[in-house]
Length: 398
Image (cartoon, rainbow, N blue to C red; front, side, top):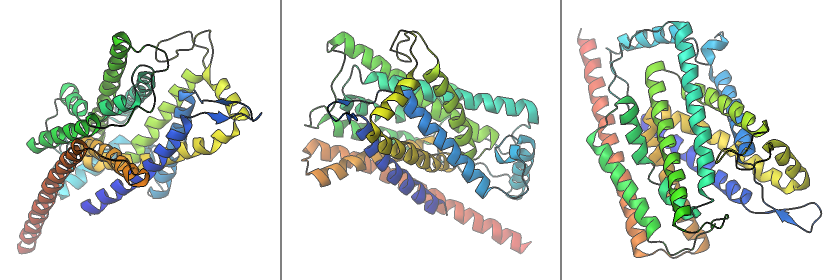
């Protein structure tokens, strides 16, 4: 069942975010004006984020309501009735002889976690959700700002090393340690993707738009990229901590995080903010959303990719949070990184690109790391089944 769930998660993430990537690329090129004589680019990142997070919160809420137990209260469905949830977890834990969590990459916490009162713990949980939402909103802004100073392939190369900050932030923020093979897999995937990107012969698809091509501009871009990676690592490690401490489901977390992201991005997009680097680069007390709505009216061809971008991102998040809940952030990051690899391989097949020997070597290293993870996971599942069979045999003998 665990292998089947992982397979469905991988399939869902791949299919939804491949379509999402197509829409994202379409949104990065100019759109035809209704006058038929001019074209313009859509430059409203907060509006994009708001559309996607709003649809994501709606899809998570629909999933929760449809899959929830009949007669459950709203607070229970949304994961805020933590007292009853803790009682349920303790009951199930006692039935399974106090076994620890099976989430891959998670810490070895005992099932007898300290109990929390409903009201203060719910407030603490909501504050955690708000913290993650703020990290996500800031990370998206720094990622968008990075493209003003670094080429897109350089940014992808940096983002491909996301496994490192995820493990680093897990250790720094929550003192979480991992199995030795995890470090080997992280190293192989990171090195493999770096080799694949580094030996490529393709020219950058998007150059810097502000004219700062010197070392000063590159340093700013690298700084923005590092901040983006640190924030991404803080997001994943905090999500792991929420799953372990509060025992919420992936869809409950998805609903609250996207709800807070919608509120934050709406506030940043509607308020007439002054010039703020990264967050609000356009000065003059202008707000972003009226400009975005005006662009849609004068460039109606943007509607289809905008809906595709938001809808596939929302559905893809259902699979992402399902993966987070059952397999941990490291497994999720490896899935998303290898999805980029499959996107590159698909591009090679469709557009007849030529890979260098170095790129083939990088791809081999990445898939070698994935094979190590799959082999270890299979051994863990087999050992767990053997242990369960032994426990059943003992119960029957009694």
